[in-house]
Amino acid sequence: MHTPIERNYLIDEEQKVTANYYHPLPVVLAHGKGAWVWDIMGKRYLDMMSAYSAVSLGHGHPKILQAMYEQSTRLCVPSRAYYNDRLAPFLQKLCEVSNLDMAAPLNSGVEAVETAIKAVRQWGYLVKGIEKNKAEIIVADNNFHGRTTTIVGFSSDEDSHTNFGPYAPGFISVPFGDVEAIKAAITPNTCAVMIEPIQGEAGVILPPVGYLKQVKELCQKNNVLFILDEVQSGLGRTGKMFAFEHEDAQPDGLILGKALGGGVMAVSAFVARKDVMELFSPGSHGSTFGGNPLAAAIGLQALRVIEAEGLVERSKELGTHFLEELKKIKSPAIRDIRGKGLWIGIELDPAIVKGRDLVEQLLEKGILSKETQETTIRLAPPLIITSEEIDWAVEQINSCLTLY
Ligand code: PLP
Image (cartoon, rainbow, N blue to C red; front, side, top):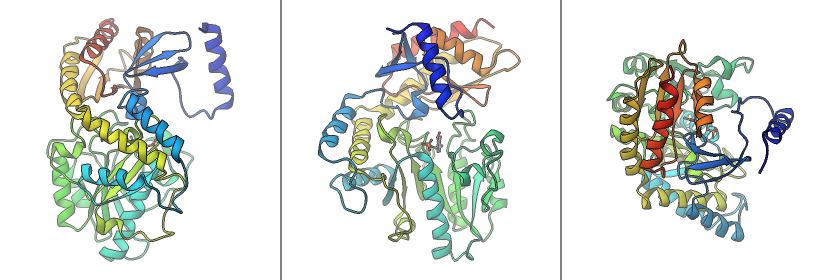
């Protein structure tokens, strides 16, 4: 077991050699199991963050570890220069659950978003007949789609884009949740609308009921592709397999990541209708690691575990319970509590308590959480969490918030 001095030493060492674009909490994690993680001093924490939803199945899920071990002893990374015996079963399952036809297997979420951008522009030129290099994609203000230069160029978050220009043209940003704003922004050059069904990084922002369905209908009417980024909201997080199912708003293309990697590696995908995806030709896109058999075996197992363990229903039931219990907390520091499934945002009054301060207090109590936009605490535990663990978390959150 380590001492606080050793912990501080490790923090200093990490800071010396690591690019400084995160602001980690002062805890050094050493191992995890299920919904819990332990630091190097042996203190246990309930993980209410799940690595931004990448660990929806919990840490070290035995079935994921088994698939990973078995596949790693067979074949890991042969590249897509050859076929492999794991990719088709994975992508067939992915297409089946998302009700789409073909998939591009990738690694990180942002890589899948970039792939979606290429796919819809290509469709715009080859199918819709948009003049070369004039395609436009409508996105939402306060979006978060990742960190590449193209994508930060249409982010409204100052920290994300300042000093990283020049920004790529071809993106029109409109207020989130406003169908009329999308309608007004559509031109003959619009190839797609690309939004998050619920904006996670913006602070778990839910659009008005009916928004997704109306956007879908608007897209259909105007021959515009409807693309949803469900990197964070997908795979059970909101109490449905995909957040679009809450409104029966089937997209033409779906971007997935995070939980698809079962909490052990980066696995992402852009899944779409055949007429969009089949426009790619050899050489027009690629990814050295995308679709490797190890990733495919893990991705398939992750989808199977979500179904076999009823994690979508669990997210719905436990999420409802969690939200109800949190709403009972009486504190002037709370401005709003909102969420869907096991994805909840507690918006704070920053004049009373800053997000970071509350997150540090929760850390002391044994809860890992994370502020977003400085004022919102995001709670997104692994979907395998129990009702008792949620109740314990509510007690800790209550004991911190009622101090104010
Ligand atoms: N899209 C959404 C909605 C996200 O929440 C994220 C990450 O938080 C991304 C894309 C980018 O994913 P990654 O960090 O794996 O590139």
